[in-house]
Length: 334
Ligand SMILES: *Cc1c(COP(=O)(O)O)cnc(C)c1O
Image 1 (spheres, rainbow, N blue to C red):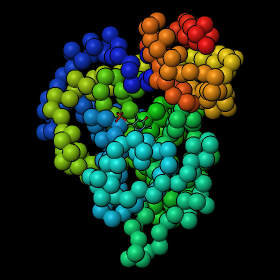
Image 2 (image 1 turned 90 degrees about the horizontal axis):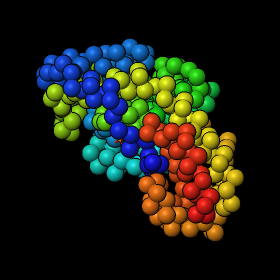
Image 3 (image 1 turned 90 degrees about the vertical axis):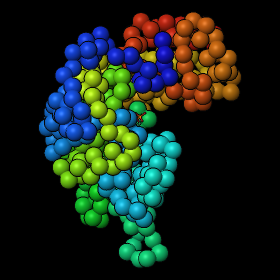
Image 4 (image 1 turned 180 degrees about the vertical axis):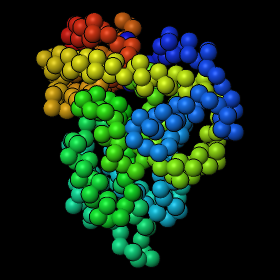
């Protein structure tokens, strides 16, 4: 049992079968029918004109930032945003794009007054503010639909573009019981990770209009992300977005069960208000030695990331019985 992340999911047997049988070609020539079919299908399914298969979510975000912004432009984002904090500064390093982070509210949203104050006037002293980038889910939390509508109004008013880091947007849609396109419709571009809870081994997607995706395709080549017989991966990706979607609700219910169980253990504090999807954070009292707990659990074949708060992620390779087991073990070792 590995609770560190949903990235640890292994491809399903049906993914392996589909990969073995995938019809492939050279995707840099545009010749891979399985990649082409996935890109066309995912764009249509989610209300965008076009899509691009990428090596990772980090690459998809970087392509989005570099396609929306030129050198000397800036993007507004959260202080906790993956594409600010966890992507090695790629937009600044490789795109010469300045991030302008804003403190996230506890629910993951960004305050519009703070965003307004951060937009730079048209003056040669300043970078040009071009884009607002949001993340949904963010640390497992789903952004309210009303907030997305307000974000669209905000960017339209200020003449900005709106990007969604939707690494786990399928989790957000499952939690809200809406189609992903109901979330995507507010955004100019959106990423989707296939290799997290959706269990594909490799790959992400970037969605946007045709001109935007054409620009991103050129930059993907520049970054070394042009892959050849990538249909082997796209075949698994299609199953991630079809067969694996119902699993997300199971992951969410397992996370809720885990959160409630942890909250009942001495020294663990969970805010149930923020358990929307498959990620559980628990704050620990100083009486909990999380490193030693992690070590004991590892002897039972249970892997967690020691930290405070400690983060548990549920996914396709964690069952409801596993939740019972891990809770029993934590109680015993606590
Ligand atoms: C994982 C993740 C990414 C990056 O995806 P990789 O495939 O790991 O590069 C981007 N954004 C969010 C919110 C993520 O959770």
